[in-house]
Image (cartoon, rainbow, N blue to C red; front, side, top):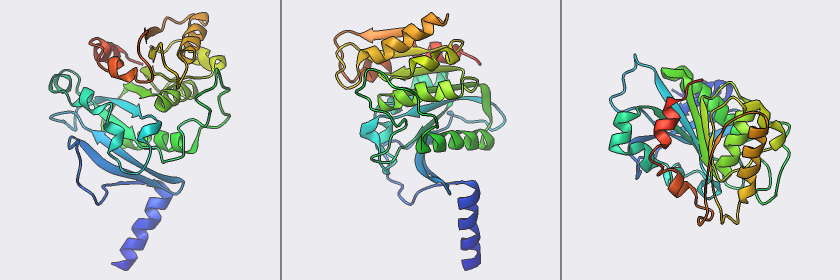
Length: 258
């Protein structure tokens, strides 16, 4: 038995391994609690499977990146702003999909930049934890039957930065993106000029300035793209609330194919 435990530990460190945590208490039982363990680090994550999941059928996948307030290891708070959207009875019926929600550790960031700046230069290398999320996504694709042309990215605040950073590093990976009150490097926006993007921001946001989204949209338009942009003039740093209630959002998202 001790030999088997050591062997499993070695395999986890070498290849990465997803396992259920010991705690089974959760406010969101439809989202399975799991942990991604690799030699490079560990990410708690939640995974929602399509209702009436058929392993012989391919499904779309949405990866959601949470904000700074949801960092940690509890594997619970990350669903605060997204669970209702994807567990809604009608949405589960009309838009069957996988939803992947990794959790960034406390004091870390999906993208190592200052959110209060007017602009930033994209870091040369992807951050450790966003890199782990990419590897986790690859493992989910290997484990389940995912429709490769229907992988989507969305995220809010710190997670909005993650979306902009990730899609410009991997422009051929995603079918569409929905960054909410985030920001990116305008100099690399041209890389996603062919990617359907619908960005959101609050006009009164004091945490992440509206110009961060505005400038990315302008850079995309300058490159010849036609992104969608919605700014809520009386909303502060909680634009995800109206954004994820937009009646056309999921219809628009799931129409997109790579």
